[in-house]
Length: 456
Ligand code: SF4
Image 1: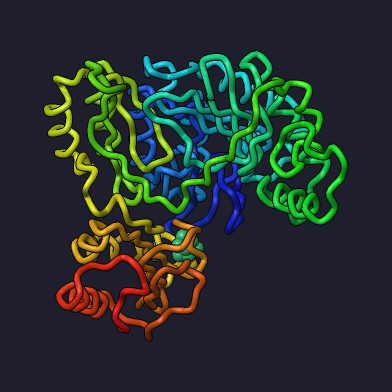
Image 2 (image 1 turned 60 degrees about the vertical axis):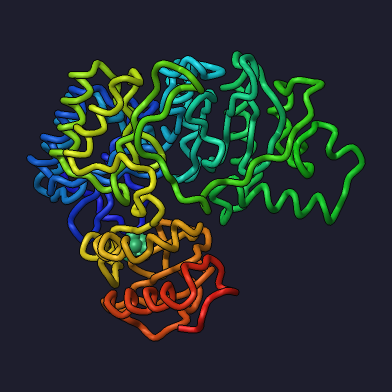
């Protein structure tokens, strides 16, 4: 089998992406559920066919790195035997559903979305018309509870608002509320409406929603908001309105949380005073190795917990009795994973950079790890940090308080900016950046905002 060679493609397993360290093979696990036996087998597959490294994606997928053209076919055979390979590329691409990491495990969840997630995936893969959805177009199913997905962006969302109702969202817009038994049909109606209304350059729901809202502002039509969707959006996505519950007024949708640093590590209870909860084993910058994954599998088996992938660069173990949290934390920390949610690495967004990425101008993750102690006082003061291997800024789209962008092995530095903004300094090595930031802390403290900063 020859490996498809697509740079910049949204990768899968059947359609891997070529990177600086070989092919990147993304494994999509339904609901992020990762049985311990599967985790151990994937760890062995990464040793046998890749370079032994994984990335945790922001869509709760596991990405195996360093696969070669020669090792891809036997790897796919292994994935197929494990039951984690789709039938074809189209099914793999459209099966893009992010679900509550604690589905079926969290007694505080409003709705158990386990079965709904599986059914939604089945409907997406079975309907060829929906295979026209763009590669990164994604669904989200949130049952509420201890680990809500409020801050996670999705093209189409079903977010539990109560025990018997989902809020249906399109991009950032709330379209209305639907009953669980109608949720899949309503979501698929919106997906079909997206395909009908989108322009060729509109690849994400947010692009279409923005245009529809702009048009609604410019050309208000009588009764345009009768369906209750934000800014007239529901009018265009009208087929879904047959499922919208009357009498429930849409509320403003929360902004997506991309600007927020994901901070998830350690043990959290399912609710105040609850006797059990879950443990988040965080991988700095989303990177972990085969031994760490296999180690988590062993711990999960020993503790009798499930393993779940999450969109916050952490693997979740649940349920965990509160009395066992300390010993589990010690065991997870011994694997080299983060169990302390004040660890500054959790608040730094860093892409792989070079040599893992062909476009990398600097080793972003390695340098972010080295600079973490320097960033720590700024992070404690509320700053966000982005270290990017190039201006594309894959790890974070939103602006950050401190931004380093790779340029020929060094970094340009900017404040309160995104990675595409012009840097405010000449390129510096990380020693020079560390010295500059330390001087600033010594002189003024770690101030968060650019308005308060000294000129470099
Ligand atoms: S931002 Fe990082 S991962 Fe994205 S293209 Fe640039 S170097 Fe590669």
